[in-house]
Length: 105
Image 1 (cartoon, helix red, strand yellow):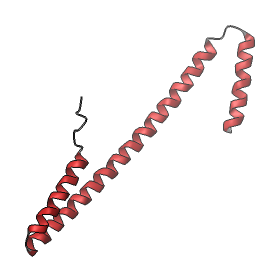
Image 2 (tube, one colour):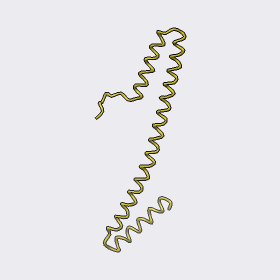
Image 3 (cartoon, helix red, strand yellow):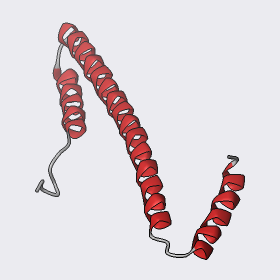
Image 4 (cartoon, one colour):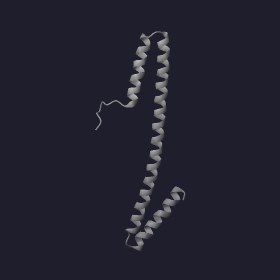
C-alpha cells in the first residue's frame, strides 16, 4: 500500500521546476537561458502527461459505462425469468412500456 505522504509524478515535476527556478536565480545569463528552456520543456511534458491521463480516464469511463449498461440489461432478464405468474409478467411489461416512453424508446 502506498504511503500517505508519497509524492506523485506531478509532485516530482513541480519540485524539479522549483529547483530549476532556484538555480536560475544563482546562474549567469547563458545558464539562465538554458534553465528557462529546460523549465519550458518540463512544463510541456507535464501538460502532455496530464492530457494523456485525462484521455485514458475518459476512455475507461466510456468502457465501464457500457459494461454497467450490459450488467443492468442482464439483471433485467433475470428479473423477468424469475417471475412465476402471468400477473407479475404483465406488471413488468407495463413497467417496461412506461420506461420506454420515459427514455424515448
